[in-house]
Length: 141
Image (cartoon, rainbow, N blue to C red):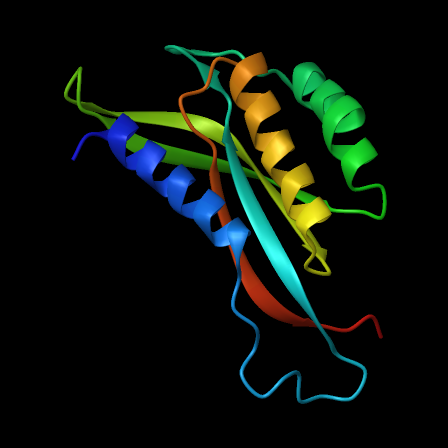
């Protein structure tokens, strides 16, 4: 399976996960924990064969797209990813950003997460953005 095809399938799986996530069996066991969802979204920073999403462009994306949709907070982690480009037959490596958002599960928040992904794809000419959503027990101690 080609890299772009795999990335598209993974993105579709992530969006499917947004549509209805499982709850934590038995609930959250520790005192003070609340059942929430944690979304991890991986953004590649290449545009074509070059590094196109600079730090300044990323910061602008966070300020204008992510923060208005999740003003309560999130975490961003720098990373490096790779995928196999089936058309050219080689591995592509690129800088990436991992956005982590933990929040209660509701349709409006899932829609805002989907909007962030779609805007990034359009703004930065991306084939796909990978998302993973899973139940989590969350406590602020």
